[in-house]
Image 1 (tube, each protein chain N blue to C red):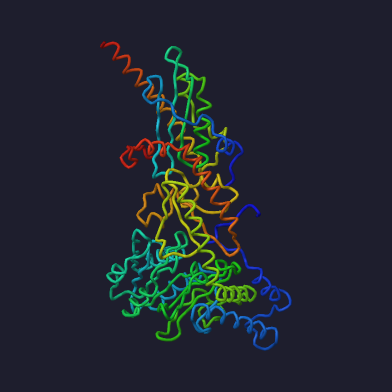
Image 2 (image 1 turned 120 degrees about the vertical axis):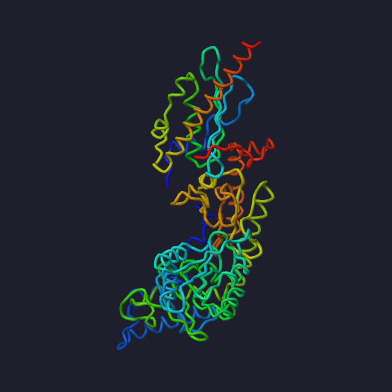
Length: 136
Length: 404
């Protein structure tokens, strides 16, 4: 199967590879997929709690080239967006940007799921710190 | 050294230039129909076909009269299994085969199941071999055929043909073997292994595509198969159709070369394969060979690089042609059923690469390949959340994954 140039570019030069501190209350971590299905994505966002803007995003992905490219692109899209804007990102934006063929659409779905999971994790952390400060 | 490098010799082999030379006159100059009995064009074609028949028979310890020509191994497997099932339907309707067989065997068996046959699919042991005790226990008074491949196309594991043949012979049950990956690579002898029917193809042993053969035992016992195509009654009535003379000449020549060079060639390929394995395993951690190293084709290496997905690895080594058991590289989007049959987790199947080293590969090419694979695996592990977790000491089998 031939890959689009954009998939090749993200595969060869993945953006924002790495890890953020999972325990930081400003950081949300999403891990989706399963090794036996052949893809696992870990996506992290670091949010400014004052403005709600995503200041940093990192990923690591076990999966095919399109899965790597989808998550790499997702981190690029996330930076500078607010948490609510990030939740509005749809997998079809990733499909179009990377020209993914039909058999690879699930890679983009997984990236969307990873974004949602990371934001959800961040929100949960914020909620518990808020509750903690209230009870204190 | 020229790029890309071809290391996918289980899929197909390049044709040996000596084979092409032998074939060329039979396209234009000597174009006769081997079935034309009344002129010299036919006679010379027939003579060439009989020479090839002998070259093939010699390589597997058979008699020329026991070789019939087909279009390739898929046809040979269909003809062997369906042909035996139909010919011996009065004796019984039970077939024994293995879970790791090629689709041309498995799907033929599935077809026969729909027509009322019963099929036992033997599982594999962790090393890729079938369990002989389990084979013995699988026979019923209705068993008419055992079909077990000589060497597996993915993991290169060699099944114990001598023992299987003996078990079948003692029970008076016919033994078919799909031997396409083994013939010309390791010694195969139909009498020593008590093989009754065997599938052969040209393009896995440096011969042409589109031509194959089937060995059908003529004595002790005399085996017959029901033809699957109606026509002129060629090939002792078992396979109608005008013979592909250039292809047959090529298949014969390819077998003759294998017979002459097999010993030397397999030693050379084994050394290259072992070198590749040793380098990968010494420079990378968490690398696993799939299937027995002891009972294995000398030129096969099937290996899993944990925490790295196969298709992404192939993408990184795009100047090297190999294949993967990963779901993403298969048409069905399922990971390799052969690797699953070894009892490996799907995860290691997704991470597997098959190397098939061939006659025309060099040490320099294998060196380059080892270097590229090591480089890309390291890069992809830096990208892998599974590798990160493993480094942190997390047991991946205990993680609650969100399967999708």
